[in-house]
Image (cartoon, rainbow, N blue to C red; front, side, top):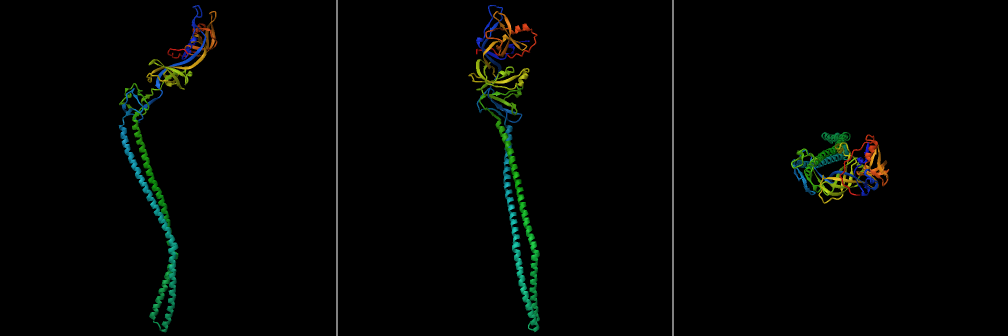
Amino acid sequence: MILGVAGSAVGFAYVNSEALDFGFGGPSSDLPISSLVRRGTLRIVVTERGNLQSTKTVDGICEVQGREIKIIELVPEGTEVEQGQVVCRFDTSEIDQNVAQQEIKVQQAQSKIETTEQELEIQRNEAESKVQEAEVELTLARIDLEKYVEGDFPAEIKDLRGNIALARMEVERSAEKLEQFRELVRKGFRSPEQLRAVEQEYEQFKNYMERDVLKLDVKENYERRRMVTEHTSKVSQARSKVVRSKANRIAQVAKAESEHNSAKATFDVEQRQLDTFQEMKEKCTIIAEQSGVVAYANEAWYDSSRQIREGAMVYFRQKIFSLPDMDSMQVSVNVHESMVKKVEAGQPAEVRLDSFPGLVLKGTVKSVAQLADSNRSWMSGGSKEYATVVAIDEMPDEELRPDMTAEVRILARTIPDALIVPVSAVAAHKGEHYAFVIGDGDEIGRRPVEIGDSNETHVQVSSGLDEGDRVTHDARTRLQLEFGDDTEGEDEPAPTPAPSPGTSPA
């Protein structure tokens, strides 16, 4: 298959006028149209069509949760609004009711906090008082034990022993007196009745002494052990009461603290819910975050019931409108995969708008997507296209609007002092390129050449031709005559969309 270079060219070119020298090779009219091989500046220009858009567009989004949020106020589409101006309002009746109910819950939760805080303080005081009472009781029990062991018991023993000593002296005195009375009775100096009185006195003192001796024995051997055991038990019981009081204090205070913390947690939950409702109420009003022209976000054009308007029902996170910044614009285009390798950020470009035919704007390539647009690929029958953004360097006085159709010409590369020929002067067969050169005797010969970059009008010749050679413009036809149409070779690439005409000298 014979390939003409024109079939594989991409983009559009600007070429110095001195490189164009068309002629017929001499006085004979039988020679084909031809051109001289000249040196000139070859400019590789990628041309695509796209739409104008703002570099900074702020979207108005419904941030109110729900599926059926009613628009009750909306500025007309196309209205110029200032930053801070209200653009849209949603119905707040249901949210107002939720706010009122939630405020009651918050007040109740706040009252609960105050109640539990007071109860906590009461529990702390009561528990502390009980602990102090138990500690005092323990101290008194210890004092009573010490008092009995070191005070009361020794004093009682001492008293008894003193009484016993006195009683023993009285018994001894009474015994001597009794002996004397018995002697006097025998001698007749005292009567038997007086003797019986002295004997009774002796027995009485003897009983007193024996009684005190018995008391001493009981005190030392029985009562002391009983009283020490009783006081020790009271000390132990008081000590256990202190431990229980402290444990009860911890438990009661912990319970009160738990109820207080629970009340605070409930308050936090209710307050957050109230904040959510109040925030949702605030979000029922959408204000302009920047100045711009209001554009409704009518995506479902086929469903009139879903159109953005007053009274329409929208849902959470639905886009309501957009506010493009009209002072900074750019053009979004899709560059074909055969051309995208030539385009990169920072390259200069020219922008022409269909709405203003005579207006030419200077621009700069802002970004080139790394991955092809899958949606565009499906729509274009599998052809890969890459989203490219071209920023307009300086805004004109004319009023530009988003979505205006624009043609972008990106200067992808400039090759100075290139050896160039018209694309029709070179054709390909089985991967080899050829040109047909007119010699001095007007004979025409095929010559293999190597080519470099090309555009829609000219191709760079790397080798095989010299400056001043004259080449024919019918290389494809001549190559077909030599090799035939059925010559096998590479498949011809799919043609790229033709750019809009119009050039200017480099």
